[in-house]
Image 1 (spheres, rainbow, N blue to C red):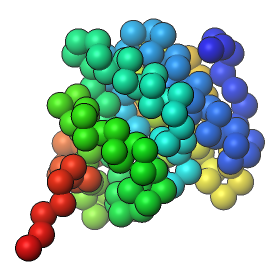
Image 2 (image 1 turned 120 degrees about the horizontal axis):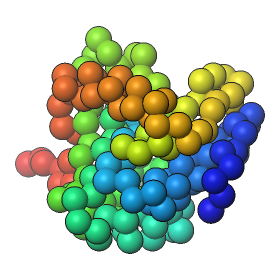
Image 3 (image 1 turned 180 degrees about the horizontal axis):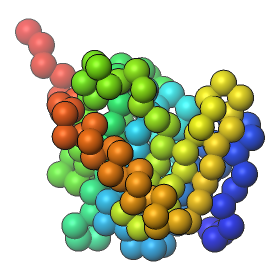
Length: 162
């Protein structure tokens, strides 16, 4: 783990920056990590090392992983390990669906309740920013809380059917 934030200029850089963001949030003792993306299709959520890090982090008391998306339809197919892993961690994890009127402007961002933030500013050209800045992280937490307050639960562990 490095304190130096990675530069985001490619899709691979974005994935590396997300891993960096998670690792730094874990190391700083974050109690809450919020991940926001329209569908999480480019996130490394199936990475075994990341899942192990999340497991270790979530075993500590009062830890919360929050996901916010427009849709979770593709996540089980793209990230089967993560989908299976979350069944054991639903007590410490929330998955929210943004309301329709706000879902088209969802940012691609990871933020902790400390100083970590990773933001993909331009998804077309893969440009973004990863940083350790408490003010910026607080700003992102406040921005996402506005959407979360109007969101409904999604990505259930058990699918209902007849």
